[in-house]
Structures are given as structure tokens and as C-alpha cells.
Image (cartoon, rainbow over all chains, first blue to last red; front, side, top):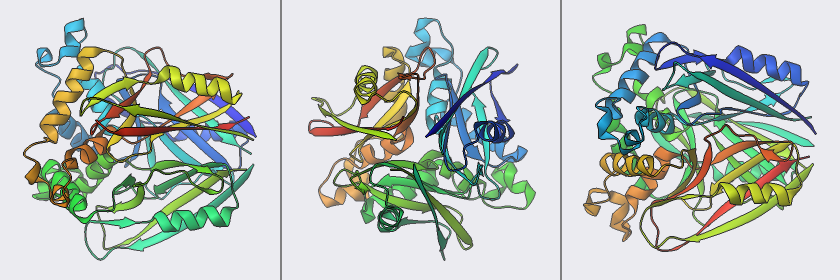
Length: 139
Length: 139
Length: 139
């Protein structure tokens, strides 16, 4: 069994953003030499998300509006987590709604994806350094 | 390490539906010959979901009511994604709430499940051909 | 390829709770002898969740408030699932929002985690015996 590990790093200048990381995952698969297996992609943080959806600007706007309505950032004193001095309680909850990680199939050395599937890093508490882990196992 | 791949296809006549695919996953595991490993099941589309919950008609009604209240389909012009000519922005968001994929354990050649766990394909934008990927790795 | 399986058991005295199970997962990885691989952790039930977030009491309060506002337990007759004699429809939906399972990387025999990542069992329908499955594959 082969295994491979790689980290991506981000420092998003805004509080929230969706970044397409599909090419970085494809590159990691290529570097790993794995032909058949699984790739796990997850943030190493608890206020961001890795998810699969459409690379369409309007939809990303809709996600932002949906999440901010469901879990508003302000007023920050509505969250007990923010009593600790943080202001990111909403980010922890938003990441839970969008999901932490994705697990994808690798077939014949490539991401086994449908036409429109794209992998995103979802940042909900940016302006600081964050890492994403890519772990591949297979043969 | 063994690996196995199979696609299921669906063309749901309604916009939304929950379809029990547990037997299809069990059959794939049997075909794979894998005794110990993991099975990944995911839609190859971004407006549908694979998830695990109860095969109970009342609960599926409750999921439908919950999701439609949280992310209404209409009016379609409330979503910027629908400015592209689509009418399925709600389906992309609903799939995110329900999750994309499941990863399940295979032990002694069988799905390692609790009593009530059943795998569903959740369609949120039907009336078109869709595919579900089953990928198995193990020994 | 190595594989390893272990069950954790819980009987939570309250309806809802978040229990940190990171140490139990670390112990299972150690027992497995796997150095490079993946660990899957999932409840064997459909009214509870395994998820990764912060071990901070205020945040857990915020999760509880968020989930109870989004999917109230009472009145129980608002859910058709509860027509079956159950009172846990809300628990099935809450688990869907929080997610079923986590898949984590094992690197050099350890959980490949960021600083603040902790694994939780999220109970939404307690006062009964529940099981969590840990399945490890790797080399």
C-alpha cells in the first residue's frame, strides 16, 4: 500500500472566501503515484471547510447569503464561545453546516469525478494562516 | 490492496426523492471480494447527496419539509446562481446541508452497520440522468 | 494492508451531549499498529453524530442553541416520524446537519491533526445504549 501526504497553505485576506483547490488535489494525486485509492482532503482547522460543489460565482454568493442568514457573525455577543475573547463562533458553526472534509475516489491515477465536481476550501475565519491536509492511500 | 469501482444510474421522475441504495452497495461489496476495507459512496453530481439515516416514510417527509423551509426552491430569482438560466440553486445548497458522501467500514465482507443504518441517494434536482459512484478499497 | 476494528459504547444520561472521544481514537490507532492510513469514526446509530470541532464549553452551548432553534425537539407532533410512536425525529435531522462520520489521516502512527482539532460523539437521543465504530486501514 502506498501513502502520500501534502499540506496546502492559505492566508485569505478576507474573513470568508471559497477557493477552488481541485488543481492542487490533482497535482498531489499525480505526485503520489497512486493509481487506485482514496484521497482525503480536510482543513487542519475548525473554522473552515473542504467541500465539493460548483465553481460558479452566483452560487458562492448564495452560499454566503444562506450561511450568514442561518448563522450571523454579528452581534458577536450572541455566542457564548465569543466570551473567551474570540469573535469566530459563527465560523465554527458554518463549517459544521458545510462539512469538514471530502473523501474522493482515485481511479486510473485520476480524480474519479463527475463533470461539474470541484473541490473548495471554505474559509469562515480568515486573515490568518491556515493549512489543508491532503492524504492519499492506495496502490 | 484490492480496489473496485461501480456506478449506479438514476433518472428520478420528480424534482426531489430519497432512494434506498443499501442493497446495491451490499452487492458491490460482494462483487469486490473485499473482506476488510472501506467503501465510499458519492453522487457524481453537485445537486444530490448520499447519506445514511432511517428508512421511514414519515422521517423522509420531515427531511423534505425541513429542507424546503430552510432553502426554498421558489421564488427562483432569490438565488444568483439561477441568473445563469438554472433553477436549481436550492438543490446545490440542500445537498450541502445533507452532505455529499458516506464512507462505511467493510468487516468480514459485509457492511459494518448498526441495526437501523440505511444508505440513501437524495435527489434535489431530478428529471435527468444521474450517477452514483461506489469505490471500494481493502484486502 | 492492515485493518483494525473497535467499538466504543455510551449510555448518555441526558437527551443531548457532546463527548470528546479523541483519546479513545488515539488509543485505537496505537492498538492497530497502523503507521500510514485512514481512520473512520462513525456512530452505529442514526440519531447521533461524530464530528470534529473545538473542545470549548461555550461553543458546545452555541451548537446546542443553534440546533434546537433550527430543529426544535418540541412540539413532537410537528414531525411525521413521531407518528410511529418515537419522539426523536429532531435527533435524526440534527445528526444530518452535524454530519455522520469523520475520516482522519494517520501519519507516522498518529492522528494527523491541527492544533485545535478534537473528535466528538454528538448524542441527540440519549438515555439508551449507543455504539461508535472505529475502523482503521493502512500499513
